[in-house]
Image (cartoon, rainbow, N blue to C red; front, top):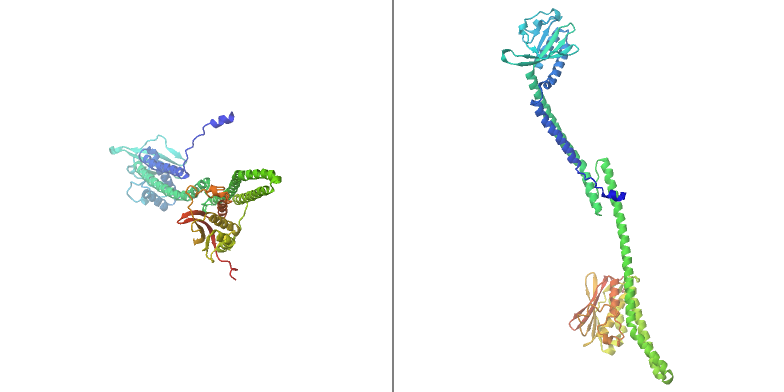
Length: 517
């Protein structure tokens, strides 16, 4: 029940994205933020935010001036550098808050400031920058602090950011900047920094895109190769990469591909052998059935004849010995005929079952025909048959000469049985480059169309009325078919003008070196 319940649980569907798309999406988000933030920072933030950067600059400026405190010439140069470099006003007050120096004062500062500062002359307060403090309490950090001031004189509102610094002897130095200028400068700085950030991010995106392309290409190749492996295609291999981990993974995938390919090929060979064994077994079963069926059919008549004549011989053995002897002669002839038929059936079974392994030798095709013509010469003369051997002497074949001689024997025997009219039997051949096509022609009647494809079957006889009287079983052409199939060579028959022409193919061979010596 638990397993059945678990199988019904719906697995969550994951939205898959490539690593390149994920990284690009995140960098694009950062770029979008980098574009939006300058817009917000330029006009939407409170003014106090824009004072942070100027405040830091003023703090650094105070450090620069105080670094030279005590050296009149260096200190005055420091004040001048702050005024020009930071676009600020500098004012110096003594302990009584009297003005000792102001950027607004026209004479040279060396006329106003002398050391020690407590001995410096006082100048008119009209040169002082007028403002009212906005914050009720100054922001102080040690001997340094900040004030925010506002001047509304002449109908124009001007805001100031003031950094004050106390000297070791108690004098107060003020660095004053207009906040409008501060905010503008800060906005410019923000825009510049934002532009630099966007450029750097864009450049980073380009570099990352190239790096990811180089990194993901081997991964895509792996996906492609493993997909082909899943379809049992091991033809492609992964190329080497310069990334150590990916290179090791590629080598492992290639090794796995080779191993699977070898294993599958080995399994395929075993399956083919098993299939062949099954087919051979099936063929043997079919051959057994054909053999049993054919033998049982063909043996009915001779067995009946033998039985009848045996009973007659027993009857006449005492009263009529001569008749009994004739009956025994018929029994012997039928026994020989039965033995020949069984031997031919066994020959066909031997070839078709694969039990016979043909030899491979070179032989003269003309000599095989000439041997048969010589053996049957007297029979040809008796029957008035003209036998012509037009096979060229220089033509040699390759194969099992013993069973190929059986092909020739069956063709010629079949020709002798069916030759009519001029009674001509002729053997000739054609050269087909890689093989010879050998023909056996006999004059006589054509084979009926309904029989021409069946004559190669065991026990099939087109002229059933004459077959038994001539001692034919309908197995000769079946033997030819089995032998030619054993050699993987073609065979057949054609109705031609004047008669019938059977043919079979023999592999072409060169003349052996020992011939003609």
